[in-house]
Image 1 (cartoon, rainbow, N blue to C red):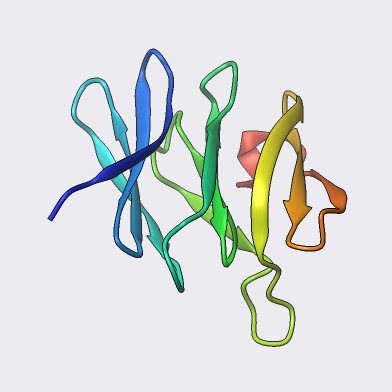
Image 2: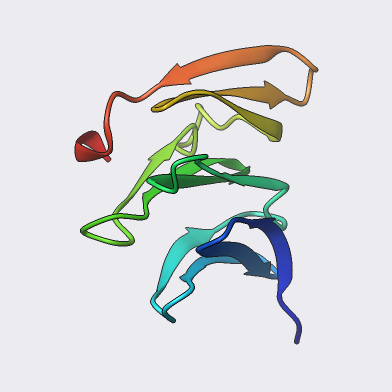
Amino acid sequence: MTNREVARSAGYIVQHEYEQATVTAADGRQASLGEFYGDPAVALIDADEQWCAVAGEGLVLCRLGQPFGQCTAYFRQPGEVRWITALRQTGPFALEWQGEDGAWSALAFGTCEKL
């Protein structure tokens, strides 16, 4: 089995092995980002390395600071699932996601204290 890297920064790597996504810090700490139906499609790491996001079947945001690995899921509840194909950071605690219909939508989540 091999891990597939989906995002990298100076201090973190987001990868997945099949449907299970993880984030690994340069110091070896690792946190689960959850399981996705189908492999995760995309990921990004915040420019300030405060959080990361991984998406495909819904979206999971994860804190990279303290406490490391605290995650919040969006668009993953039955009847509310969104299939996300692209991500881009638009602010310190904001991103846009692209659905499979090609439309971009905004998600502002405040600060990492809210994760």
